[in-house]
Image (cartoon, rainbow, N blue to C red; front, side, top):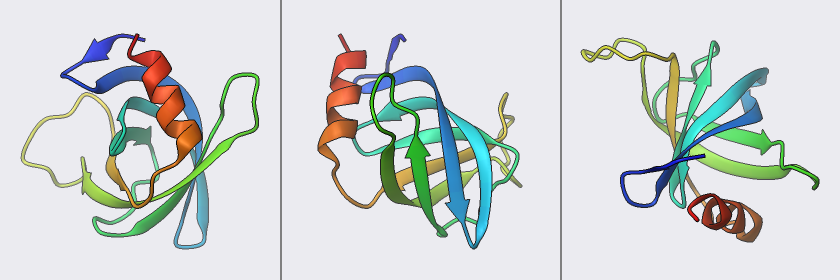
Length: 104
């Protein structure tokens, strides 16, 4: 995992996405303490609350909640990956520790 733009790190973490009664699989492609970009085929609407379940290595999954801050759908910019940017609604010690380890 490589460091990118300050505290954001590139990553490839499998994630389960729950939004509006739907469940889908995705991959966290970059992450920071305040949010992440999730690559997925199921793209929730901007502003929609989302629950995530990250697969943590050798540990129980990390469950997080956030709001869809932006999506690649209908964007005027060209994106290599389909997905959405998520802003976390709460701090999670295990998630923060995982991000801290990846930044080293």
